[in-house]
Amino acid sequence: MDQELKEFLQSSLRTLKSELTERIDAGESRLEATISERVEAGDAQTRRYMEVLYERLDAKIALVAEGQQMLQEQMNRRFDELERIVGGHTTRLDDHEVRLTAFEKNSTIGGA
Image 1 (cartoon, rainbow, N blue to C red):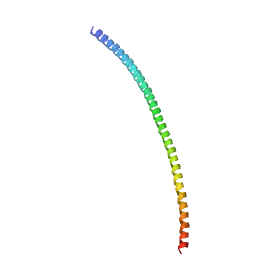
Image 2: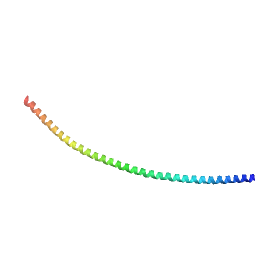
Image 3: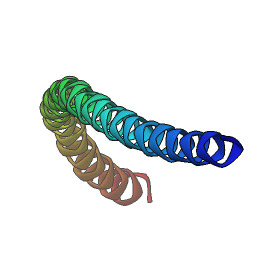
Image 4: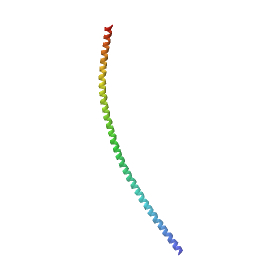
């Protein structure tokens, strides 16, 4: 009877080991599937988040570019205005130079 008990226990242990191995393998497969699903969901969420960030950054860059263009246009208008003002003074200075030269010639001739 000891031999029969021994064989029964060995058989039961093999069966138990086989069942446990199957359950562990099945649990492992479910765990891998769950992890894979969560990683994919995280990837999708990260992708959406990055798209939103990209859109916001793109909009902000567009605003900066628009502001830069407006500033450049304003500066160009100011430079044109300044050039017109300075150009007018340059013409006046040239006119004064001509008048002073004529005055100096007349003074030298008249005073000599």
